[in-house]
Amino acid sequence: MAYESKQLPDGKLYVRVDMPGVPSDNFTVSVTNGRVKVTGEAPAVGHDSSGRFYSGDVAMLSTPVDIPSHRIKTITKNGVTGLLIPPF
Image 1 (cartoon, rainbow, N blue to C red):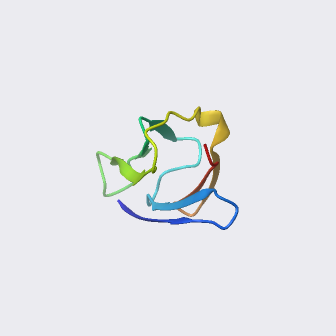
Image 2: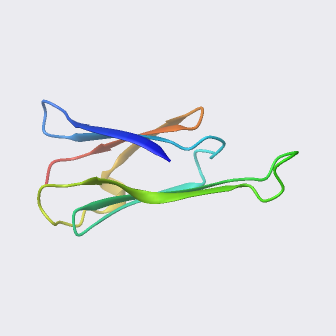
Image 3: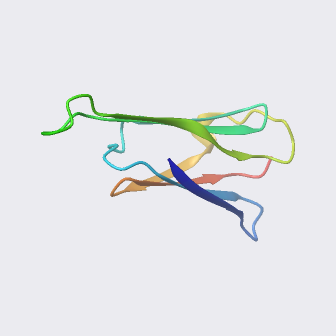
């Protein structure tokens, strides 16, 4: 899973994660102890009998905090998920 992150001028952390084939309703985001974890699953299609599963830590916050997932804004389009994580 490819990803990149950057700090925005307003203090939010922006993280972009590439998860080809993962529909917008089939991924989860969590921030636990300062680690941003993204998990997603793409359904099996045609030649790919098992589908695809993605999971990984995509960013580390400067402070080991937990942020409720409902505070993280997600934008998904064409297998690319953008996360806006508020300052803590």
